[in-house]
Amino acid sequence: MTTAIVVAAGKSERMGPNTDKAFLNLGSKPVVAWSLLAFERCADIDEIVLVVRKDQQMAAQSVVKMFGISKARKVVPGGSRRQDSVGNGLAAADADTRLVVVHDGARPCVTPELISETVKAAKRCGAAVAGRRVCDTIKYVERAPHITRTEDRSRLWAVQTPQAFNANLLRRAYKALSGDRKTEVTDDAQAVELLAEEGQQIKIVENNAPNFKITTAEDLQLAADVLKLK
Image (cartoon, rainbow, N blue to C red):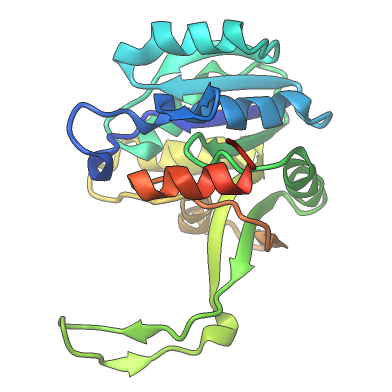
């Protein structure tokens, strides 16, 4: 079984106080519904676990019902950090889960095709993440506002979600983090990297289509343009 964990429990700090970007309207649907529908339509996904803020569980269940997300078997509360939210999602996944796909609910432009490509890559090598090559010149700034050096962008990638992993591998990675309050990871691949299992590689699935994360109000309009919403 392949289980998707859609994480939508963030604080949305850049959207302003008392705002949950996952439930802002994007056309005729809330932001998180677009991601859920992509996973619903992907033949490689068997189950969806939706992770939201504790106070948004009822709203999330309404979204699942309203848009016919039949694969969304569970809606669970998130934690104080992203890794805690993913850990809650992992704990709620079906016991028969062999592959886990984690996705940010704030990336509404994800497609079933990208999900499938990432799943297939993870089945081959145990771990795979969507990403794109960095095109901009990247400067390293040790002490702002002065540039320290220019990085070699030929080796740099901007990583996205979905990110897919052998379920036992991801569970071990998050178990290793569970008692550590100092280490904070910004994506699931980093948790696996810290596990440092010998021979474990993480494959990049190149994606040049728009798949950005909504963080500001301006991003909502960009997403609407990509999704061709009126």
